[in-house]
Length: 261
Ligand code: APR
Image (cartoon, rainbow, N blue to C red; front, side, top):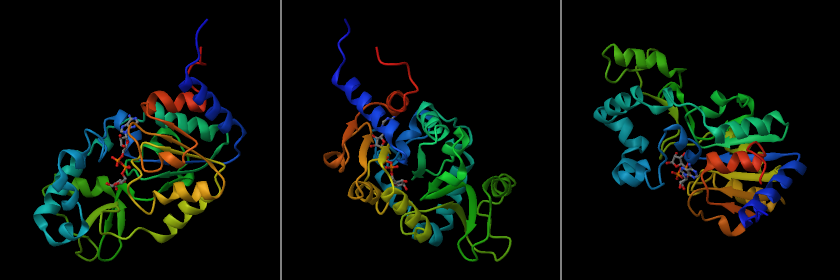
């Protein structure tokens, strides 16, 4: 007779919560994309973990002030792993959740577009930190597709200015020091408050205001489940915490993987 471990019992409980919940809200962070080859920030192999100075240099003020930083940024964008990354089993689990009519909102801190690439409806994905697939002019607000501006960089423009006003161009992502879009944050907070089940997946929950969506959900009576390789500051208030790999755990929570034997 196989013994059912405590984690399998916990997965069974969460799967039952997901079954009865009419509105599941999911918050994702960089951890859901590492299995697609995109490094996270604060995990053991994270971008900030490996190069603490990089976090400081990612501040918008350095980017606007220093053309050399912009030139390096455009070279990095040419080689961004998002262009070749493919969604993984974790992303697929969230597509299945939407297919079943359970996904009320998918709040993501990620800029890689993998949720949409996996098949989640763009209208249901709230990109609170923007997207690397678009470019914005910091002066006039012009927006366009990233690949068209990357073509200019490939053609030799090391720091391409805005065609409309000559201003500084940047990926349409929110850097430290840059304002978040209030309507987007409000939408995320509202969705969290409407959740019956709130899944936090692959985020260290260290960056506000988005980490506050966990409290908003909890205070509105939602069950909170955290799936993350490392502890987070919200583990103590969660109804269930899984320290496993997302690609393995999330499909089982959603009920996609083989039934538990
Ligand atoms: N399975 C489970 N957990 C994982 C996996 C995985 N395969 N890979 C990474 N993780 C966990 C890491 O242990 C880490 O705790 O995912 C978490 C990712 O946390 P961060 O690197 O802090 O990323 P995130 O929470 O998305 O950062 C928020 O900070 O730098 C800013 O704007 C950036 O959107 C980002 C924000």
